[in-house]
Image (cartoon, rainbow, N blue to C red; front, side):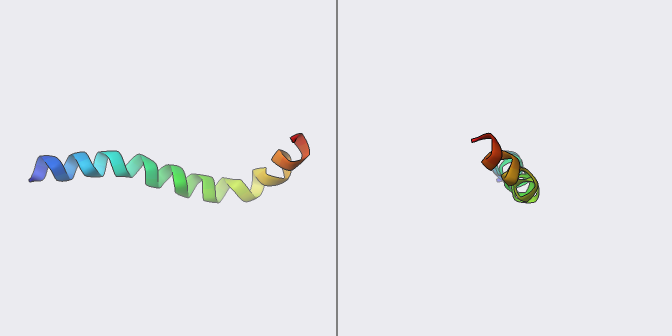
Length: 37
């Protein structure tokens, strides 16, 4: 039980951090992305 919870946390944590990071960074980089594309 504990091992499966840790495995689930380990796989979910990077995804949550990545999504939060992209949400925080996207407004700053969106104008650059539009200019580059």
